[in-house]
Length: 422
Image (cartoon, rainbow, N blue to C red; front, side, top):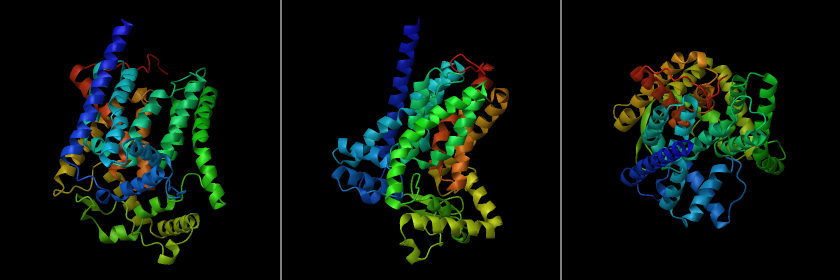
């Protein structure tokens, strides 16, 4: 029986992987612009240039972003012999693992094959995730790495499985190198471990083990950066840029505007998003060494926030409204409306209803709802781009599927992670 169950799980995971890969391939072939470097968006172009330098041996230490995703992209470009489309097909192999991984997680949580399967199906064809999986953004691989992490992290009082706590920390460390915003996830990691554990001392031990795994990955990069700058640099020297681009008077003064991206697609800028034209630094200050420039910019942003509390609250609220698809809504951007705003808000409402329905099981669902809160903090610290919601899409979908399944069948899904409760 166990063999038949495992074979069934393997078949479902394989089918979900194929569905996710096929959806990405369809978008890549039928909806993407010609794959040439000049058509890449700004961040994509940055990652591509850094990765290309790694491949041809001209890479020099870069302070602006960590090395994680450029290194992964470099590996894909190397295997694809420099072909952009080949590299995308390779990265899509990683991105498509998201569907079987959410299936595995939800089956472990609910014990229900249908909830796991439909969570995987919807995530496989979820528009935002499918589009990101065909890009050169770090969100191409970060949702998959996050799902690997929450599946690998032991549950509850499993202190004896020391290696799994450490390896889970290593994966989280890699995820932080790929997408530095996950540094903000560390407090949620400890909260989650404490909620899943009856013994706070044991929770502290396992939390420290996981954190040591994170440190083991981040330390070499941090040491190298710090040695080159003569000052402690944890991940990069662009933290102030992320904050400044989303908190400045220019966003308010210019308002909401439709613009054309480098690849020709229509998009928008305004409150809730990020702008490189923050207006804080003079041309001379822009040329300062990276760490010095970052410190100066951070001081100026904090000063602006103190002097403009009302504008700050407005912009922060705009970030949250945007990241969850609530506002703005552009009727001219039909793809954004029908494949973004409407499904995002619908699934957000369903996921919140699920959290209310299973509110007494908040400890068991902590790996889900903590991620939704985490991406809110990421938005507040940078901007409300839908890219930053990517790790929460999988859990939002899973919670929505749980609630719909309950409403259809009346099954309350006796939640037990791997058959265990807290």
